[in-house]
Length: 76
Image (cartoon, rainbow, N blue to C red):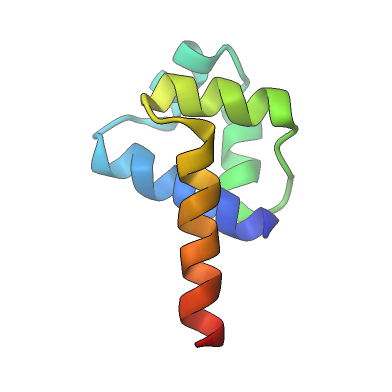
């Protein structure tokens, strides 16, 4: 699930044309942390997931819902 969260954050970020640096500024998180989350090397805490979601302009539940849908596609 951690890798999926990172993949969804990256997908949303790129779709909105936001760089990791800009997302880091908006979320007040380190760019290196965002890179690690997107690559699946680190797991976001609930607090950091909320910060990232707010900076991306989506509810945190949306990111988790997209992960669930991706799981459903893989297992279906």
